Image (cartoon, rainbow, N blue to C red; front, side, top):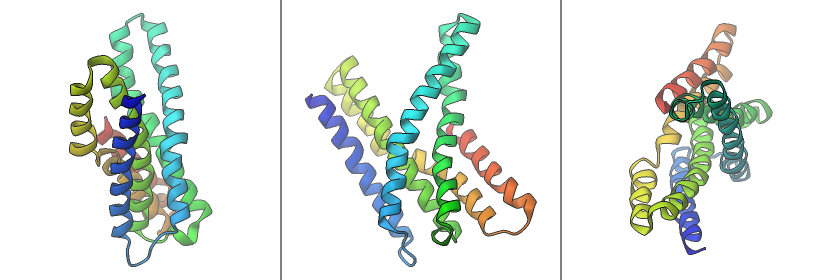
Length: 196
């Protein structure tokens, strides 16, 4: 119980601090806090739970087809995880851009909403990693993972997903049909490639 509580605390508190920094970037035209909170929750719960389920199904499918566990693990971590995770985070950004159009009117808005949803996702993912690390190898490994995943690379998900946010924002601000379709796809593709 102590390890899980520590994982929860050491994953979510830094994510909230990082989210505040993202919120601060948009200090001249603040986004609604309630909307940002909902977007954070989407990342923390909807995207994370969806990713766990989808990645498990895809990984098991590869295992059933190939009977090769190492290939299934490699396909899941290197191929399916980036596709699934960036797609599920991107859905939240698309929903904000579509439903709350008046709140999504600059490129920076795309970065802000992308960063917030990604930090929510990272927080929950880090809880699993930290608790799993403790369960597997004890407190030393727990804190090593905390340093690597939360401190050293705590911004990774936000950086990857920012490209999706930029693509969606660029499309939102453009009248050209090709750009309106192509920019979100290009941004999402960059996010997936960088994540992979």
